[in-house]
Each structure stands twice: as structure tokens, then as C-alpha cells.
Length: 422
Image (tube, rainbow, N blue to C red; front, side):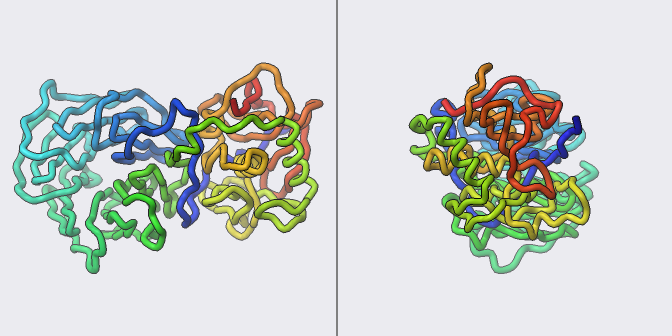
């Protein structure tokens, strides 16, 4: 039996406001998102209440359940720091906190950055706090601090876009024509990327511009920017919306609404199978004029469920990549579309297979309409399919195929159990 091509783990955000990601009542966000941190293949969103939400390959290591203002990942991606407005720092995973007391500060912490020595903080009045607790008063209003690649210097960034470098941080120009205050900054290679509250992005000091969220109608202002790769960056808004650009990948968002937090009415599995079969047979569906639906890496993850153009970011299939000119769905995009049509709302949201699985309940006994997942573990899933009974599934398998019926054992990596909406 051949293994399926890894086809559905990662995808990027399309330039539209992400759809609400449905969440069980116990997971509904009680407050705003405070910050975002990333690693190659995933990211974390930290809520103002201290809760951490992990996406893609990012793992949860813990949270203080206390208000926080910043999150910063360790170099390995196997941990992160969370910082509070008063300078308190918590370390999880391999993040180490090298000071025992909280420094006395005259204004709240607004930014954090990582060097080889640990976590550095800056406050609204420009005070810089070193990992060992040493305090240096820089006496300039700041919204963020960004360490250089060497870790031997840093930039302090102000709301008006002015930048001051210390150590080996090279001078950078102030962006022109700001229409909203700068709220966050991050290093991308040797350069610097600034993000405005309106979604505008400014690439400075050698960084490359890959796009911005400025053209979009944002429900909430942008609150953070992070870079997972050397040729990309990701923005986060206060409501949990996420926008990925360049080679950074979109893994899901934390946007919820009151409707999302209410369990959906039960839907018979037969209705889910009916929808999946209709799509497989090429019938006219909402968002689809009819005809066989092709596989498209990253397809189906736009602002609304249903076929869309895919992307060549994170693509690992046959070359040359044609995902960005193929209108279709990938495996998780197909599952999202089917469940949206069956339930009448976006039950699974625009997340990848890991995010979808976390929203479902496992059953040892399968019934038609359940989802079947494939991968190395529940936190490293690679494929998802709709179970239709009699050992069969309907799925978007890989590049070059259309929505079709396969054996449930299409891959040796099938995870135990069946997953459904409770």
C-alpha cells in the first residue's frame, strides 16, 4: 500500500478576512488576543487572559492563566516566554527565566524580543529590561523592541515609526505616510518589518515586502507581527484573525463569535454523506457551478468554505506547482466545505487538519459522516477524509486527483478512531 503524499498540513491565508473558526463552548475566547509568536511551520496566539492557542507544528507548553501582553518563542521552537505588563515573565518548555524578582517599572511592558541570553523587554517609556533584570532607561516612547540577528543589539520602535538602534542595530528610516500608529515589529533576516494598527506593513533595512492587510476591512486592529521564515511574516489582529504573507503559512485563527460558541444542532451522518457524494459526483453546489472538483494545495481555506485557488507555499507535490492556478480544495478544505453545507454554518473553520481534529470528539465506532484522520499523531496529522461506511471514504487525496472514493486504508498512517461534532 503506498503512502499518501503529504497534502494538507499547511496553507496560507488568502487576502480576505478569515472566517469565524467555530469553537466548542469551553474554548471560546473570553478576551482579546495580545500577541503572536511563530516558528517555521506554526505559531502561537496569546490571549490577554494568558491563554495560549497553538497552530500548525507549534505545541502548547503551558500558560499562567494571568493577564499577559507578549509572547516570544525560543530559538528551538520548543518553548516560549509570556510577559505581563508589570514585567513578570513566565517560561514554558525550554524557555528559561534567569531572574527571580520582577523589576520596578514606571510604565507598562509593551514589547519583547529574544537573544541568546534570554528575553528582553521594553516599556512604553522606553525602559529596557535585560534577561537578568538589569534596567536601562532609554527615555523614548516605544511600542516594541527587536533584537538583531547577532543578539548584540536591538531596535526600539515608536508608534510614529521612528526607530533607534543600539549595539550593532543599524539605522533604519522612519516610514512615510503612516495612516495608523505602528503597533509591532519583528526582524526578518537582517532587516526589520513594522506593522501598523491598520494592517499596513513597512519592510526596512533590507527586509522584503510581501504584502499587507491594509486593503482589508479589519474587524479589529492589528496587534502583532512575527516572522516564521526568512521570506515571510504573519500579522495577528486583536480578534484572533491571522494574515500570512510570503513563505509564512496560515495555520488557522482564533476568531470566534457567540454563534460559534453554541454547539450546532445535530446533523445526521447520512446528510454529510449525501453532501460529500454530491460533490464527488460533480453536482452543482453552493460555491461550485458543477463538474468534478480538483485537488488544490491550500484550496478551500478562504474567507468562506468552498473551492478557491490554492497556493504554492509549503507545496511538496509534483513539479511544477500549479496549485495557485487550480480552483479546488485540499483535504481539510473539502471536509470544511462538506460540513458547512451539511450543518449550514462553518463548523470546522479555516484551520488545517490538526485544528479540525481538536474541535471534534473521538469515537471508537465509526458511523457514516464521521471524519477519519491520517498522520503520525493527533498533533501531526497529514490528511482527513469523510467516512461513508463499508470501509470507504470520500476525500481530496493529492495533486492530480479529483474528489473521489477510496478505501479507508488509503494510507498506513490512519489514526485510530472516528471523529465527529458532538
